Length: 125
Image (cartoon, rainbow, N blue to C red; front, side):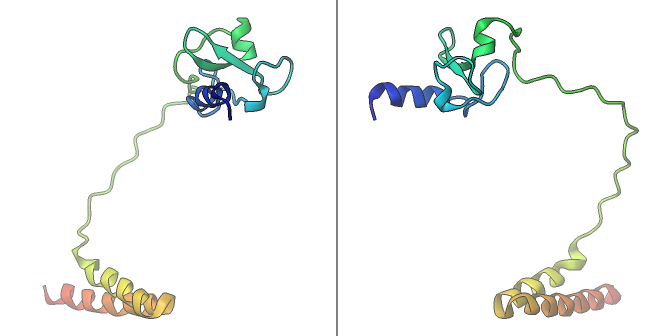
């Protein structure tokens, strides 16, 4: 690879292959080509890739990302009260140990046995 090719790749990868103005996908092989899909050139002011349309000035420059479409305001969703996870400790440990020892079936059996231990602990409280 030549230095020019490496520099071109570095500039192209600086935006992961997207136009730095309008965020269109560019083709690396479209460098300095006209009238091809993904055509681009280097924006001399920013040393970043820009599509042919943006460089020709036909599209207004967009700062940052494209604007999100406006959506109707939604009613807030009520957040449930946090529950205690202390009651499922043995279920998780039994499932992990069972999976380690006997695979998926062991995970099922281990979690069921752990759930029994958790239920006994809840009953004792």
